[in-house]
Image (cartoon, rainbow, N blue to C red):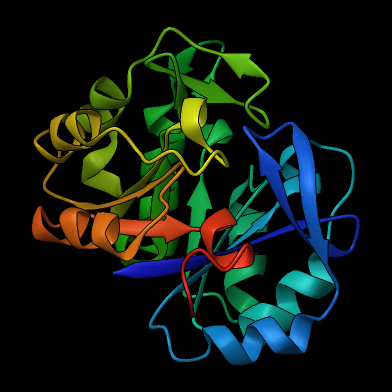
Length: 224
């Protein structure tokens, strides 16, 4: 399944390379709502909230009210997760809040599960160099994605893995890495990071992995 990505920064849709350098920005929100309306799921990430330098809540609410969304970026409490769901999001993506002082916070995962329900939770295990990165990908842990998935899968419906090393570069995502991740969990696995063609999406689909795509859509390398 192709999951279009909407990344928000400074009140605009943007595309960054490896979470650092902005290369594209758009303000024609209605156009992208129309283009993405046929998809069963769209991913919305508030990058300002992830970086703890503001938020784009009005835009998040607008997209969640018009599209079937999973929403992430800076969701660090039960109250924030509930608020995003109340906006109309189908699921919330929790990442950095699950990793405190370099360790996995299974107590918080269990609390989210108890209060919100597994079906509304996607846990992010984004990594650089094989280790999970948090807080807008600025801080690295010693935790591997496979280990985190093993520890956390009891409390979520799926995992989002972004391969930061190739994110935004449209050079393809390493399939061997994805295969290892697929073997590491029975939950839904969603991957992102340089996916550039329908053929690649089909390869991922063949091993029961869903694909988040941003840069290739916004540069029209993949048509929607």
